[in-house]
Image 1 (cartoon, each protein chain N blue to C red):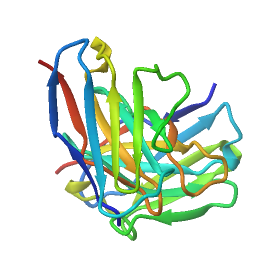
Image 2 (cartoon, helix red, strand yellow; image 1 turned 180 degrees about the vertical axis):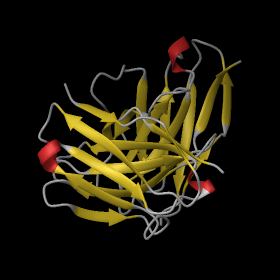
Image 3 (spheres, each protein chain N blue to C red; image 1 turned 45 degrees about the horizontal axis):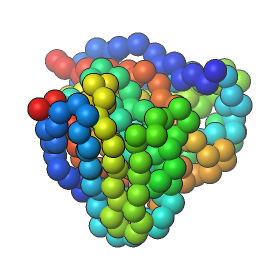
Length: 107
Length: 122
């Protein structure tokens, strides 16, 4: 199975700041098979980005994804209060695996 | 509106059987793979397996193969996850989710159920 490693584990930032989250795969997942999800406490995950860089329907443009091969990034350009949550990356190049998550918390 | 509605919370004893459900609506249920995802308390997401309701083609993660059974009944647009003998370590939140790409076995998940919490404790 492809192992996904997310970093950092926790990101402490203030509203208005830029957040950069990383997801590294143990082997290439190509350019199309990487997604990002946001999960708030007590809620199901919500799809933010698929195909590494394509925003899902209804997702604000402050969220952007990039990368290919083994290294991927999710950037939140300016954090809004509702963006403080846990973010998961997922690969679906073969069998599906998820990263361990990055918690974005209020500093 | 696409919706996945899961059955309610379950409290069982280890060794008991359990079947939870995920009913889809607002789309052609037969045409999209449905995945099951586990989230243990305070932990990340784990992919358990998928089913294509159109023909009940099923695939499992090696980590869950043999311990759970995934099924679907397209006549009632419902997918199921079942255990024949629960373990305490099965205590978790279980989500169903729809593949975003129609027909595709390789996909991200665009719609999620609300989750079914399962507690297995003596």
